[in-house]
Length: 59
Image (cartoon, rainbow, N blue to C red; front, side, top):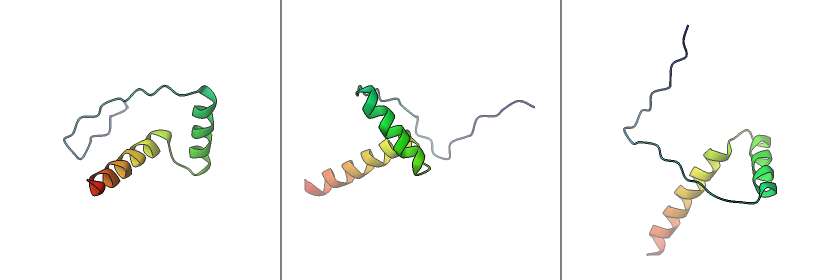
């Protein structure tokens, strides 16, 4: 059987964000995420949502 792509529940399109960081910092971040059973992408998305939430409250 072929693999099927998961369908998104929302209609928003995904976009990529390219960030340049030091290799050691990246590796440490990924390792820390793995230790708490999450992904780097999930944590970056959480950071962005929290940051935007705080920024809108400060305005």
